[in-house]
Length: 316
Image (cartoon, rainbow, N blue to C red; front, side):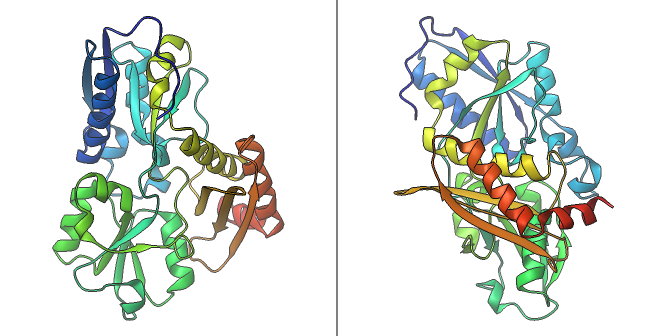
């Protein structure tokens, strides 16, 4: 956590808006525990909400408005004053926030990689032609098609428990999930293999928790500032800059992953067609002093590898 000093006037009450899925509630409870340690006399409450993204389960997110559907109702609670902060998985936060809102803290990152979950196969390499892999992500789908064109990739929606149930019922031979969510819910034993970034580059912000508040409430930003993890924040801001420069709020097969290393921030990114037949990939190392500039540099590298043509084809 950051060493940011405590606010001069500790809060008396903080209300956290959260989705009501088991993983979202874990994340909100985690933030509540951290805040209660910081401010023992503060009353920290959860406001559970069902979002449009939770309600629409019969169509891919890319067809109905993208992952921003997971945060609109939470933002409405910030605007009407019924909540002070909202807790999100950073991979669900749109690249462009409305000016009324601000990301005021990004917490330490859990394992940011994808995970294979299967009762039949220990790795993707073990899976025979025609085996069915479930995923909700165009990013994962494109990478699966590119590396394993003989597998059948099928859309998979629902919260984490629903996805695991569908796997256990035999609807899929394997599913790909974020390792972070499984670990946070104590389901790490369901992971058959953590997929290295070379095989499945993570989503922007994957594994990190973000705290959102109204931009007009600097006192709230001060309350949660100690929860910010500087290294994670640099990495996530770098990744988000890549996505913002290339795709804005559009849902496209795109991944970006930044790591803090001895010689600076190592950043990788790709843009692909959904079927994986066209892919632009780039990597570079740069300074942590200006994450947005580093992300823009990688976006330009990807354009040089053909990303603009891939994105134009997706938009047509």
